[in-house]
Image (cartoon, rainbow, N blue to C red; front, side, top):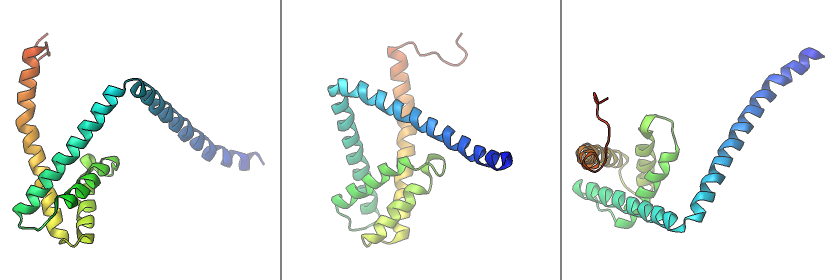
Length: 156
């Protein structure tokens, strides 16, 4: 009898641990939302920045598809962009490698685009994003360093 109860103990312990972690995450979301709901201006700025990000990704995808001589509408690129942003939730691979490409290529094939062309377009978009980060990061870092006291390697 005690052996059969011990067999139940192990799965129940794991379940209780997962529930406590879930409760902790829910409390963190609640605390964050409480802070944000008190600062409506900050919340509206966050929504505006997310909308600008959506439009920027849409514009890049529109440019890339047009560069590849594909007839694409800006509305379709907004749908691709929204799907791309939603793939940030999925953490199967580091950086979402392959997830974003697969979802956008699947969506593109549903919309009538060639699967391979969509994967290449998203790959080019990812490459453009990396290049822009490599260009902007040193510029932003040097600007921030000039205006604040950011410690450098070997100082202190």
